[in-house]
Amino acid sequence: QVQLQESGPGLVKPSETLSLTCAVTGYSITSGYYWGWIRQSPGKGMEWIGSMYHSGSTYYNPSLKSRLTLSVDTSKSLFSLRLRSVTAADTAVYYCARDNEPYYFDFWGQGTLVTVSS
Amino acid sequence: QSALTQPRSVSGSPGQSVTISCTGTSSDVGGYNYVSWYQQHPGKAPELMIYDVSKRPSGVPDRFSGSKSGNTASLTISGLQAEDEAEYYCCSYAGSQKVFGGGTKLTVL
Image (tube, rainbow over the protein chains, first blue to last red):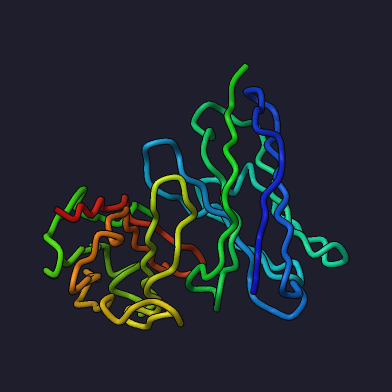
């Protein structure tokens, strides 16, 4: 069974960089599929952030593209997100997920809350 | 890309059927047969219920079904059960990006 687990700081200061990691178990990242990030602001809906293939091919939400970097470490079976110059609007629960085909998310992590505040 | 439009809430009694709509444009819902639906209980991660408009992942009850007409996709839940009470989100592929709906709160009366 594919399992994903997010990790990273729960508090980030405004203007700094938000960094999260997603560890994948039960499946080899190099076997295929895209791997993505989705966030959910408190009391609001969900927003797709971006997705990447194990080879490094990426596609980003255009509204976040200028601040976003996704990367993958196949040796450790994990993928990462870096979002620069954060503001309070970036406060959200961040989920990592397997991006199948890539048209839908079939396995999700439990999510991690990141608060942007000084 | 704007968020897809879903009703804020729907409700139904146990055993009844409810339908949740998801309206987009020809650039997303109408342009691709790649609409997915997710169920989210409070404090939990979303769970895939429908993909590619109408396909069900293994383990999802056949009470859940999906369809699409033009720029609007729909999720129908028949034989409502108490455990179906949750938030439901649609999501559509939109050509190298994805867009979610705002979510619909389903209340089982």
